[in-house]
Amino acid sequence: MPDTERMTVDGRRKCLKRMQGRYLAASRAERSRLLDDLAALTGLHRKSVVRLLKGPTLERRARPRQRGREYGAGVDDALRVIWESLDYVCAERLTPALVSTAEQLARHGELEVTDIVLEQLGRISVSSAQRRLARLGQDTARRLPPRGPERANKVGHAIPMRRIPWDTAEPGHFEVDLVHHSGPDASGEFVHTFQMIDMATGWSERVAILGRSQRAMEAGTRLILARLPFPVKELHPDNGPEFLNHHVIRIWGAAITGLQLSRSRPYQKNDNRFVEQKNDTLVRADLGQARLDTAEQCAALHALYDQLWTYYNLFQPVLHLVEKTRDGTRIRRKWDAAQTPFARLLTTDVLAPAERERLEQLYAETNPRALRRAIQTGLHALLYPRPSIRTPAATPPADPAPARAVS
Image: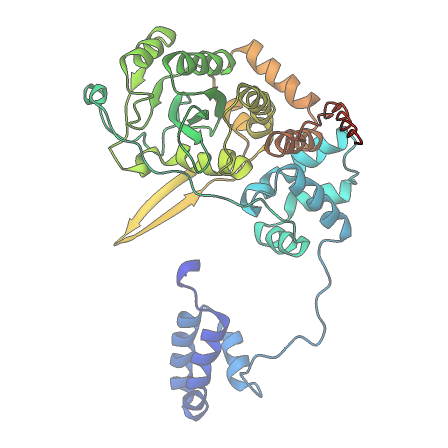
């Protein structure tokens, strides 16, 4: 019987309790038929059904002695450090990366693990890890919703509207979006995050630009393409005028050979679903709704994104949808074991040998926990700058009042 159709323990007991009187009063032949039916219904062996029906009670009883802990304090200590190093991701994303991250942290002196602890980290289940993470009780950052959709423009009429399929296996198909850092007041010029997400691997690219002018968009595009370790096949923005204009489309076509362009349907954010999700988890989760509107803030955010590029792509495991089926109005989804975008990229042949070697060396030399501390320090300095201390100029003493003449 499939697991989805298997009866629960309470359901079995309830069924057997209702049939117990009938079984005890039946003849030998009727008991045999009843046992066959009950074994097929409950999924239990016939002997187990007989034991339960002839037992003193069918009520569930507590164990006389509780089971001991399978995983000790060493696993909890390792989970605490690894979870913090990977920015408190969910257990489904954390569990497949436990061993590799533990070894990486041990090489950099952030964690001491024994062979026994490594073996336990390799076989701990997602549910067991989830229970321990809930007990550890770490705090995560507040997650804020992204902004609303942008309007379409006339240039986009020549670009086909579609979604990039969720089962795209070839790296290079990117969803593109712009995150506004205007705060509560959208007037004037302010900083934007230009972000691209690869559908096949989850690889993420982002840069900070000041304003949405042609020069700013061109500079952001060239910075991303210079750093991206594999070629771009397709770009899929929404209908914002910062993307769908003659200048930006000309720049993209000149910089990327054989580029395919597609766009979302107007006011349909789900057509750009992956980058919209990453706008929340990779941008808003760190920056919130703060207003950034100076060249100094833009430069600081750009430097911070250089560090986040290494952290998210090389060390943050991501889930990838592998199956989607529809049962009436219900959609069932299945994800694979979480892997980092870098690990997913290594399973393809899009990386040049020199680029693969460079990324592997960067991975081996990077301490993810120290990198996360540096990112948190940079974020705090960006969002909560110290006010400049100015010494007030010395005020000359006032002239004394002239003496009044005494008549």
